Amino acid sequence: MGNERKTVFLVDDNVTNLTLGKNALAGGRYNVFTLNSGERLFKMLEKNIPDIILLDVEMPEMDGYDVIKALKANEKTAHIPVIFLTAKTDGESEYTGLTLGAIDYITKPFTPSLLLKRLEVHLLIESQRKELETYNENLQKMVNEKTETVVELKNAILKTMAEMVDCRDDATGGHIERTQGYLGILVDAMRKRGIYEEEIAQWDINLLVQSAQLHDLGKISIKDNILQKPGKLTPEEFEVIKAHTAFGERIIDKIKVKGAEQEFLNHAKVLISSHHERWDGTGYPLGLRGLEIPLPGRLMAIADVYDALVSERPYKDAFTHDAAVAIILDGRETHFDPVLVDLFLEITDEFKAISQTANTDDDEL
Image 1 (cartoon, rainbow, N blue to C red):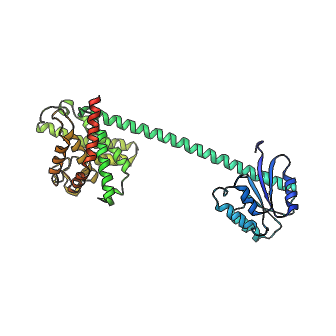
Image 2: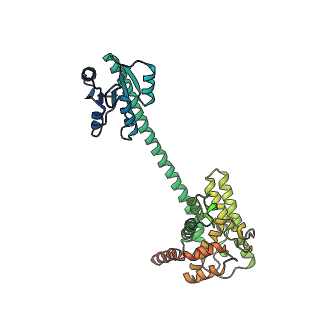
């Protein structure tokens, strides 16, 4: 227990017992406070919390059982160890006291040396419990910090991978970050309005939005002379562009084999494979139609197309926000899920705010 003086509250309505108990304990090792009732104990507890309480069972008005019930019911005092001191020797009384939360049960009259030894043992146990609790808290903190570091490293690597693709394909930069923002706005709006609520209830939304970083991962396989071509693509060149979805899926599958975070990668794979599908079935790579297209892909289609429209690219000037909204509205029931287009029309100002911030940032560069 070290040299630290422990504080003991001795509670008994009998003055003789209080005197004997204090004389037995006050040998320099403990700070002993004597209290002749449960009421006085609780007044004392308002200002001081002891290391342990020695509590008589048979007291008028508020007996020891009532006292321990009140102690354990209060978060501030529930942790204080309680030893019952009592003249009762029947097993039922001892069982009752232990059931209510006492750590020991010492019968009176007690031998001072025995009381000291029992008290020493219980205070040592309590001290070790607190040390173990502190150790576990510190260990958990270290684990959390380590986990946070690993997650930050993973996110940094993923972001770097995504930005490598972004820089090759997007003259203005920031496409990945903006489409993440648009996707988050759409999902949040769906959640608030109860749209496709059963399906989105199954998602980890944070992971879904994070995984949007990788939706164009497969473009890393496309040569610059095609990816950055200023003019119209030939049919052969467009087929090469379309292959980026399959290439992106293969990359994700290879990462999944290594045992990486599966849910995150599953979201990424869905976005990669389905964000170029069209509601009318004329999209790629599978020509899915309507609700056959996974919902994340239908959401990403709107986010991706909007950003492509309002951004300057090697092959076109940027459209205005209003023009982009009109084009997406025109694609209702052909390119895009009509329910999601209607939702998009309600929140276009939030899309505009992101695109304007991006344009401001570009001007400052």
